[in-house]
Amino acid sequence: MDEAEFDRFADEYRALHAANIRLSGESPEFFAEYKVADVAALLAGRFADGPAILDFGAGVGTSVPYFRKHLPRCRLTCLDVSRRSLEVGRGRFGDQAEFVHFTGTRAPFADGTFDLVFFACVLHHIPSAEHPALLAEARRVLRSHGMLVVFEHNPYNPLTVHAVNTCPFDANAVLLTPARLRYSAARAGFPAGVLRYRIFFPRALRALRPLERALRWLPLGAQYSYHAPRG
Image (cartoon, rainbow, N blue to C red; front, side, top):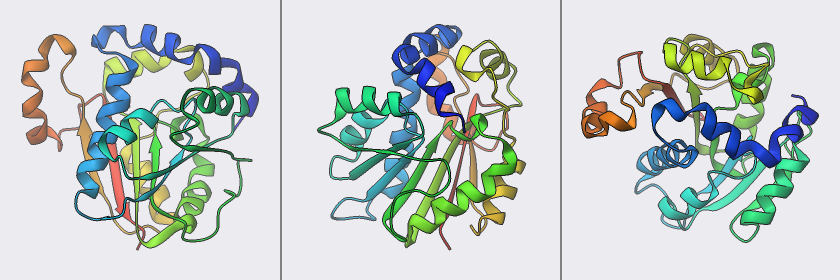
């Protein structure tokens, strides 16, 4: 993980992202919120006092307001290798989450600190050979009942591939297949998880989005999610 690479785009992240996804008709906030809403649905009824959540690779904190909206009682920690991204996030949301620097090897938390570790389109920026160790670190900081949730871009969706190939901050990205993610999670010690494909319809066809629940098995969505218990 190259800190300087992410520092370089911290101040213009949203504008670059918005330009890159314009064909979808949606904003970066749409993509950030649906992920957190999915997480909230997974956790429904599980934590009366609010879960402790680690946003692993949180960047500038784009997900923070949606965690506050959908899981208002959660205790949220944002972790990232980019100090500049953390500065931007802390300036925007410093009263809503804790922002912590990650060296790229060991997360600065004790074993069993969190109920959920959340990766939102992070792993494709990191060489796949490093994924098992990184996910093992996520497993280390999870409590025994904890859950891993990963969202990634779908390499089988041609519009997604085009968006990634033309995005400045994805210049060194390598899209991650679901099979590779499952393999890395298994090597990290996670039991078998659940795969779901997401975002089948652009904004122009948003009236069809209620159908997505029935299509989550179909490997054509723009993104996919994978969740697994700590085990």
